[in-house]
Amino acid sequence: METEKPQTQENCEIEWNTKKPLGEYKVSPSSSKVSSLEPSVSSLQPPPKLITDKLLYWNSTEAAKLFLPAAKEENCLVAIDNQIFVLQDALSAPLSYLTVVDYIGKPAGDPSELLTDYHIWAIHQKCQILLCVLKIVKKEMPAIQNWDAVCAQGLEVVKSVGVSITICSAKN
Image (cartoon, rainbow, N blue to C red; front, side):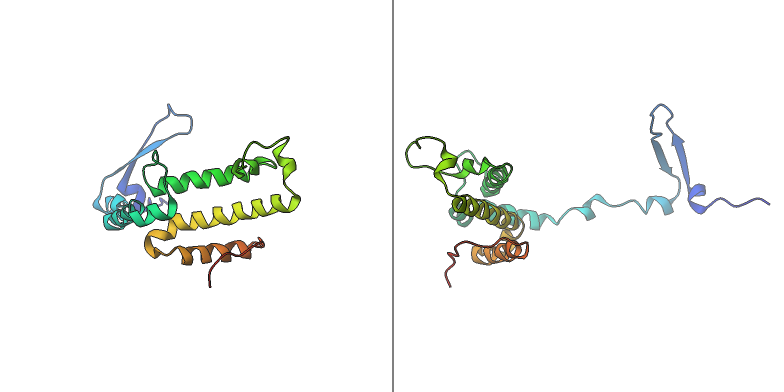
């Protein structure tokens, strides 16, 4: 008794490349049924207007006032990426928090000995909060365009993972 080939085997020719150790292959569609199943690249990308709106926001004066990009930074989004990198670095090792501490004058002795355990704990918390908020900002700010709303989202996220907030400076 002879079994029929599945429909996909009748519609495609597979050329095996034996020179590659993993056996890469090339599928050549020979019918309109198979070629119509290929994904469209344009359907996987966001609409051009959405991209343009986001870029407009990150280059706006409003965003520049909030995120203060340095002269060498292309736009506010680059500034935020740089700030995220600094905060991730500050949380990466036990003494790395010192990279975000700004001392007035030159400290005498070991800078890490000038801070109490409470100060170090507060610095770590604030780095975690800012890191969370900045990640939300990258994603939500062009659409929401409200710093207080984005901060509120960030605070809810960090509270939900157990970060307790030392001082709340939000205006009610």
